[in-house]
Figure 1: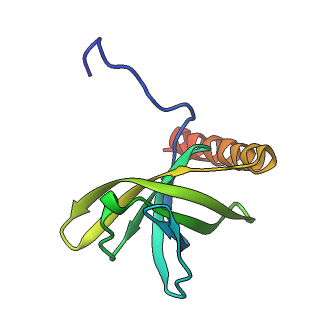
Figure 2: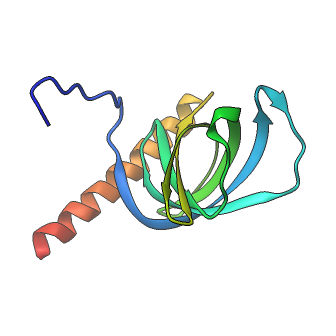
Length: 129
């Protein structure tokens, strides 16, 4: 990266080992929907500001999807609203960058605490190898 590079992320990002997650679509293009279909995927990395989810379903990112992401990290359960902000296509696998929306402080603090523990654990493993 050149010296002109500016980090845009507000929170540190932690890679996770493809943690299972479930996504429920809340709205498309700002219109609330009641869709029973759930999307199942795996989290590649997570921060207190968002996550990167891998799934087999191709969602049109330009449609402004808002989802509720359900997942567990370090024994803690989370159900967080997120907007899909970008898509990466890797063959028949799709990765979605999601930004958390309307997160209450208590959930953000709880997620930061879990991510800090995960990061410490990962750094400990790196030192052992």
